[in-house]
Image (tube, rainbow, N blue to C red; front, side):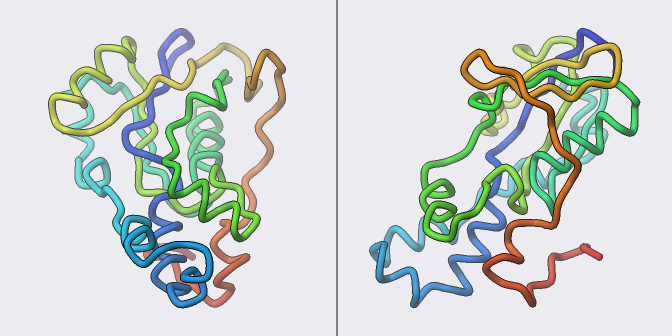
Length: 184
């Protein structure tokens, strides 16, 4: 991971947590959503989670971090900290589906801190990696770049902020007894 490389998200953030909440709270959600819409929330795209390190490298990724507990913000923090490199990301470029946003709004959750099954990738050419992912049927988006130094910048509509330390996953606010697979 080196300054100038690009950060790419393969898949969509928050889908795993949204699906788990929709499964656990299906009857409650019927007050807001149709049964068919709840079924779309319950379905998540796991195609990015099924690829291996070798697959990512063959696609052009120099490094990767699977998102999981704590969502994309935890993955960004972990990857940046592991390599002691800064990052600069555009918050509005991070791919999130409307169904995840709507579920998060119902429960007052931050989708960027919600359990995800997508991948955070680093590549010399993020656009080329996105095209390679597309050929495999996986949506990918360039969300930022690796920088020198240690700053973890988040840009939103021309304003810069700093990525905060990881917090507990948002799923626990709705499902306090929930056990995330492979979580501690």
